[in-house]
Amino acid sequence: MTRTLLFSIILAFTTLSCSAKKETKTVNNKQTENKMGTIELTKADFLTKVMDFEKNPKDWVFLGNKPCIIDFYANWCGPCKMLAPIMEELSHEYAGKVDFYKINTEEQQELAALFGIQSIPSILFCPMGEKPQMAMGALPKETLNQAINEVLLKKAEAVK
Image 1 (tube, one colour):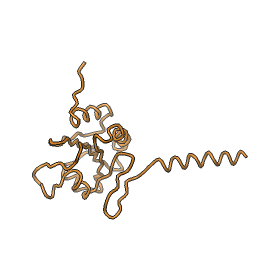
Image 2: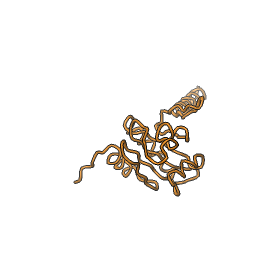
Image 3: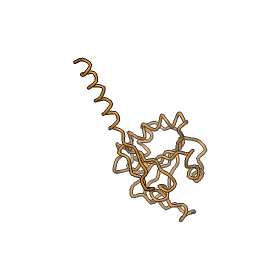
């Protein structure tokens, strides 16, 4: 009886932990968006979701239908690993208002070079109808919130 109960509890936790995470998958060269919020971009995705720099190499022409944040990172980077869960939280808090993307600089070297990424993490804020703005380093959640509100959503924080 005790073994059966213990097995049932372990099985329940295993099922919950495995089913809670949904990942981005590429099927037939099309990326399906995950339910976790932050979406990994390849060059092909970037060209259709953010900016087609091959068609417009000199002008910033944003293709998104809402502002976005792009986290340039690498798997081996400690500060990048600290920033990832913060970006994931923010992607849920701003769901439907801001798109959250990430680009692995090791795998997408052309995109990293395009933006002159020399240190990671680097965060690109892409507002609607304006030029993007870059920030470097693992910014705290409060600073990211402020940047999202003031740069992307144009909500001025009340000064007290």
